[in-house]
Amino acid sequence: MSKPRITLLQQSTADVTDEEILDLYSTPDRSSPWLRVNFISSIDGAATANGLSGDLGSPADRRVFDLLRRLSDVIVVGAGTVRAEGYGPMRLDDASVEWRMQHGLPPHPVFAIVSSSLNLDPESAIFTGAPIRPIVVTVDEVSERRRERFSEVADVLVAGRSSVDTVLMRQSLCRRGLTQMHCEGGPSFFADLIREDTVDELCLTVRSVLEGPGAPRIVAGAPVELRRDFDVVHALNADDALLLRYVRKAAAKV
Image (cartoon, rainbow, N blue to C red; front, side):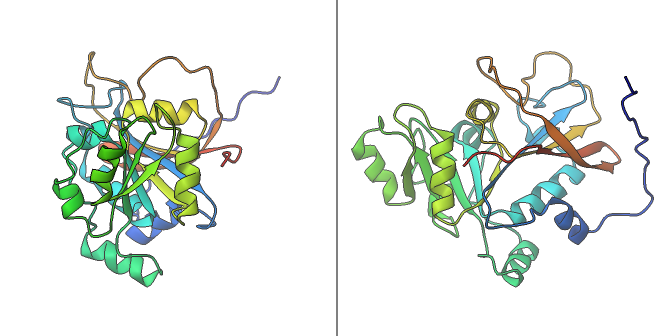
């Protein structure tokens, strides 16, 4: 048996520009469905610091995070993460808006919040301050009255009976022309995506810190008997982190 190939990852002295980063993360065909998941982790596997993923972040991670949003048609986030991380309206900065309009995209991506219970406040700024009408992804078992209340401030997308079916969610978003899907968590929602085999790509920042025991991983929930192989497409180096891009070896089902 031949030895597995190992190469040395060398640090470059040249800074990577925003345009180069956008090129590195762009998909070859925006019309084809693509679901990207983005997370951060410490080197010992913690997904949070002080209970929040945002507290684990760094300027380099935030820079790539913002550029990934720039490339997206829709930002998909579980309601628990929206509450825990203090999300506001999905509004990009001026540079991102200008870039998107130059590339024929709407000024801002759509914000899609996933909630099986609709335990959200329809009067929050997430809805009332949104530059583009958000989407709420929910289930049949939520009362029609509650769904109607949210339909005043968002498009209500039903995907599943008692829990959100991420295959149906993905298909429904694609039918709306939202093919470039960017998921920002959380860990339980990521488990659903893995279980239902809807992930095309994982972007993972590995922050150069030890957080110790107690913090959650980037995925949470019951064990899943499913394994998918991914390719390491690239690794970007910052002073305090590695920014890794993994893409599935085979195309995801739609």
